[in-house]
Length: 469
Image (tube, rainbow, N blue to C red):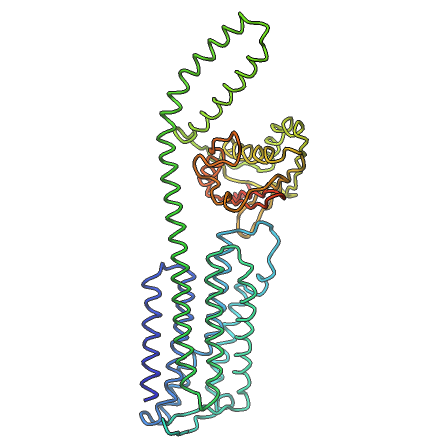
């Protein structure tokens, strides 16, 4: 009876493990999770062999017990593999805004992953020796009869291995809270908690009277937890994709509208400017009125230029450029404006040149938009910091802009970059949209964080270029 129950749950676990790869999108994280679930399933078969006392001979049961022992032993490295893969994917999707190497990369890296797999292989090989696994002893109770392992003088190595496993789980609980990608963070948190529950119930197998019940509870709870975690993980990603598609649809509508609107406005605008110039020759005592009119006409012209960015985007010319030079040119262009607003631009550049494959003029437009927004948010003056950080390992460069402005509330922050959404009184809501579009064309991303009353931080993250020789 015990054997049938354990095999049933093992087959159920195997079917669910296979479905993980079938249902969900196949990537490195899913494959590493699949590997862990395979070893978890083998662990169930490992426990099931203990209930073959009235089915198999002792030698056959002892041999199968050795074979299936690969499951509980390799659960530790495969769990580490899942966490390591999740960390690596999180860092690639959201490169650290500061280049400082995070502490957990010293604990979760490829070298240690290989070491844990090698250590686990060593543990698995020596468990074939009677010094580690002595024999199986026969037991019988009112419900069933079963084998139970007896350990030799080196049996403590298996317990040491289990301690390493529990250490990896506990340190993972701390590490996942520090990850950048919120979806991977949430998934790994649930995965780690489910694995901890699995381990706790697995340890109860060492109590002979409870040998079957903990395994059933453990595998059931673990599989339910993993499926909930995976489902919510992929639902969240699908929602983000749908949101991106909706935003792309809005941008397409803006592009279609822009061509018509710009054309209809620009033609009469040219005529108006001409007649204003004629009037100015006749009227000499109202010069300040004409200054206001020209100022507003220029503003209309700048809005039309933003519209035309969508209607007729300029063909990007990608070449290798040095980012410090581009930023220096932008700072020079805006120097007069910052002085007028009592604002100081502070730079913190890398000591070595940082190269990007980019369209120089387009990037200038992005940086000008960001700095102008920062200036508008600082009516009382202050400092705007510009930091450049190059991550040679991730091959990404982060250009960070930090202002001391009024800040943006969380509900408004979510809408930044949407067509016609602006936080400015006289804004049209296209500047940041242009910025997002340009950076996307450069295979980069824009990240904005803000705190009301403290200021806003904008990170432009772009792929680094190979340094020319």
